[in-house]
Image 1: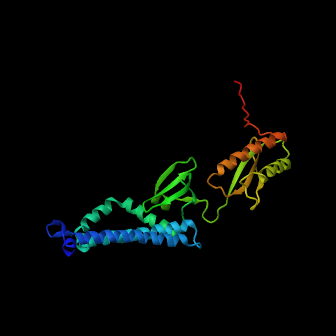
Image 2: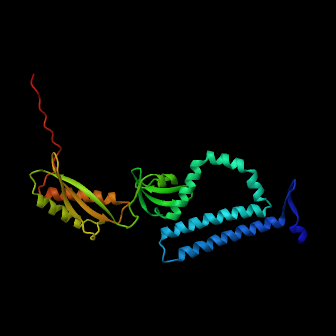
Image 3: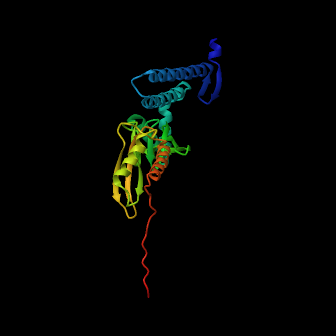
Length: 270
């Protein structure tokens, strides 16, 4: 048995790879896999932490364990890590200068996982794009847009640029739909009609209570805003569309006109 374990599978100069080392490496990898499963189950079993935070904690621990396992695996195979790192110091400096953006993405990924300012299932708006966070990795973050397209963003785009997290502190967010009516319209009647429509709109929360605001005297219309809160932040445009249709029908039924833009043109006679 000892002869089999000490059998040399590979011999290059002073380096040798024995069967025992290979078996130990296999057992170590299996052990690391089991450890990851145990850590994952322990984290996701907790009921005091929401899913997004569980994902962040597990991802961070997973990367730490994988780095440790990689270094330990090299050590098991007989590589002297101190000599290896010292010999590749100059190469690492050169790579570091050439891969600054890549390293910046890795650091940004760690910040996102630790800080938890952006979590899985959050609805964010970055560079005018509204999207839902699907996965956060060390280098990139995968998001889903409202037109069901997956986009892979470098993590530096999320840490360096200004963004809006629609679900950072609360699931519900505030939205509004604007409409203009003819100057001859009864203002109180218009506000009552709009309030009645938004009160029965599906997807609009009862609390906070939706309300109507008289916004401005525009060039061709009296402008109103219907302000409401909704939990369906990612698909809120569907709620807005349905609300606009019902507002149009309600105003039409009450003979309230939505005017066309009007312009007065003066012709000068020569």
